[in-house]
Each structure stands twice: as structure tokens, then as C-alpha cells.
Length: 325
Image 1 (cartoon, rainbow, N blue to C red):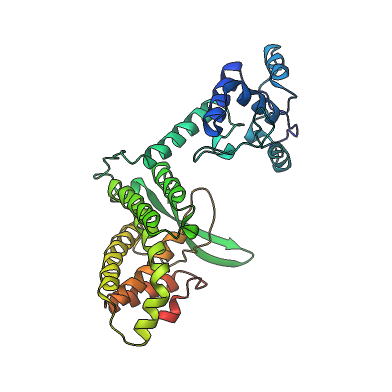
Image 2: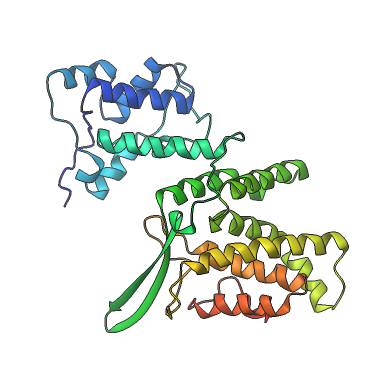
């Protein structure tokens, strides 16, 4: 159990401190000297020179993130703001923020973590080609079955757990769609869809890019398509083309998800289940919005099957799939 309660953190060496400061400088567009001053304050020192003297006198490194209790971890975050020379708050210049830099990790673990961050940025590079056509779905996500026994109640719980490769793709996708609700310009929205498509093409056996695309587009059309289906009206040609396009993407994504589920599995797959790199929500989302696209495209049998699969594996019905049956 973590026992350390000190907010002060001592880097293992000046080299490790400088490496972390360079990461801060790059993320926030600061000069190295300014980043060092900010990082020294984050580590609980008055200024950089105090921290350097503390390290040079041989003070023990740490306490690291895995050595402190939750209260200390929260207290450390109170200093998580950066200032420029004029005293103004600094904002990140790109995707990486302070939590992404894991400033309290052990040096070897942090180096591995920053390589992971680099991999996410590679995914976001428009010219990046993953060459992952032969990588199987199991390289992105695995399906884990847990037998739960709590207070006399027993049930079987399934969860989609992303691998490191799967997670780096997912983090890139989340960055692409971070402002999705605020995008009103058709050209900007089209660029966002192109980025998701590019990642989907880079990782054809990863079910998450397709699931995300289907969910975002399907949500925008769900109400209007539902009204036309209720009125038994024909979809406009453009809407029908969009529904067919989404249907094909959903079919592939759902197939990839379900290929990881044991055929004998009879438990729940709760969309709100949380944990380390667990992502169940996308599975139910693509079943629901893929079902809407299938219904709009006239694939009624497929649509009902996807709606029922979502309902069957979830104690609740957060997307309202029952209303579409």
C-alpha cells in the first residue's frame, strides 16, 4: 500500500528532470528554462535552483506515483498550472497536456509511456501509414470474461479490453473528435470524417474507428431517419447512400467485435463498465446506430438482430434500442 504523503517529488537525476522539462516545454511552447522553473514548482520546490541543489546532495528519488495515496496525488495536482515569463497561464500547443506527460512516473516506465504518446501522435500524422493490413483484431482488443460473486449475487460480465496498440489508436480517435459537438462547418466536419477514415484504412481489423464513425454520423441522422421510417416515406437518394455506407462500416465493425466473443458467452457487456483500457460503450453504440442505418437502408432483419443483441447483453437500454423494434 502507498504510504508516502509528501507533495514534494525528487527526480532520480538532473538528466531525468531535464528530459521531463523538455517534454513540458514542447507541450506548452515554452523555453526550456521556463519549463524547468514551472516543473520545479510542480514538484514542490520554490524554484529550479532549489530542486537542483536538492538532487545534487543525493536526496532519494520519489515518491513516485505508485508510492503515494490518493489524497497526496490530488494535492500534487493543485500545482498543475504553468505560467510564462509575464505570469500568464500557458495552454498546450497541441494534444499533450500535463496528465499525458506522467511527470511522477519512474524513469524507465516514463520512457515507455512517452513512446506510447509518440505513437499516438504518429497516428494523427496525415502522412502516417500503419501498414497494419495483416494485424488481427486480437492485436487491438481482447474480450475478457469475469465471473462476479458479490453479496450473494452472481453474474457473468464481459469486457472489451484494448491492447497498447488498440489504445493508441483510440486515443488518436478521441483527439480527432474532441470538438465534434461544436463543429458546424461542413468542411471541418468532412475533414474530421476523412481523418477517421484514414485511421480506419490504416487499421482495417480494428473495430473502434468504424464504430466511432457510425456512431457520430448515425446520431446526426437518427431522428430524421426515424421519422421517415415511421411515416413509411422513401429516404432521399443522398440519405439512402449514407445509410448504406454506414451499414457496411457497422457490419464490419460489429463482426470484428463479435469475433472476439466466445460463442458460449451468455453474460452482460455493460457499456458503462470502466477500468484500465476497457471500452464497451463503442460496441453497443455501433449496434444501435448501425441498426438505425440498417433499418434506413431497408436491411430490417439485420437491424432488428443488432438492436436485440445490444438489449440482450445490457441490463439497461441506454441507447433506446427497444424503441426501434
